[in-house]
Image (tube, rainbow, N blue to C red; front, side, top):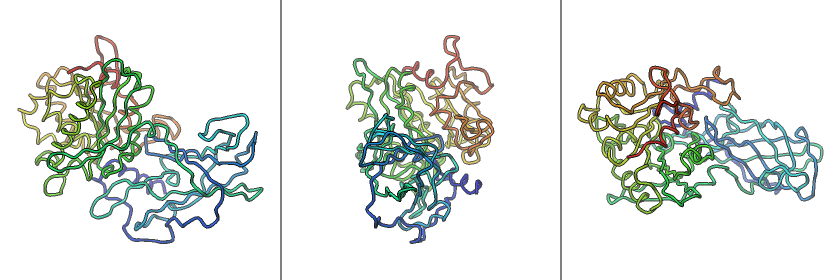
Length: 440
């Protein structure tokens, strides 16, 4: 069972891996219309290193209550997607209730109220708690929101909650998901964006480019599939004194060539011109963005595109932060190296990444850059991608080696290729603190 779910996790941020979802309809696992019009509930969906999880459900009561017991409730989840077969163990089953408390309608604890919040077990191997799934359709694989529903029963009374009233996504809800841009060549891109509240002074812009599994036209997917929402968190925002965050989305995948196949850098991709047009327009339309502090980064497919934009527009960006680089080093010429040798770049990668193999991508590129005398290029080279929270085993729990972006989102990276601390003016820094100091 654990092996099967870990295979699913591999494809969250890349379509390099063959997906596990089939394209055959299986009605048994599809979400059925609710026949019993029971009480309403609200889902709380939180982003984690491994993806999103339905970690709480708020039950709307008709009476004032002051206490609640978690053992009184049974929660059953159903997951489905039209036209796609989802295996039985991932389609329906019981959710484990960790604890319960009286709350307000947003899930905040109160002494007395008309709402009950149940905290549910979530984790990298708790698929029934995940409201998205990687699906392969029409020769394209990507993550999608599934039809996700809960049925909650109060066991002693038989009272049922089976109607979703709404969803709360603590960090996603801080983003504007309505962004769209059409380039002069007709290429259309969607995007999510966040604006800081304090705008008295010019603020930097952090750009995050998603992996191969987050293409489409729903910008919430690039935010939740691998915790890119964290760039809007209070902790990271505090490092920059408030920063704009832009998360563009490609309709397919960033590395698509004109033939429709993947490019690893040998051929041109079809999106970099349109993406750069979007970035420039976004900055121009917001005069409070500091044009000298525009930072570009991404993972896998997005790591490829980050490097591509840096090579094409080296004077536009103040720095780059790139994880799981998918650009093959052999396609980068010595002339291109000279173009970026003085640009601040911080790479992150795992040694056991079998999707973007480091000896084909980041390791030779880093060594060539350092050989040119590049003064501000760093590379945090991790043995494995592990559980940073300690909830699932800590250093003893390994994600797929492709997941090096978790160290970027968590602002964990603080060491260079030789294991020594990265320093600025003699003081050790980690990734985001370093980046906040970089200017064009």
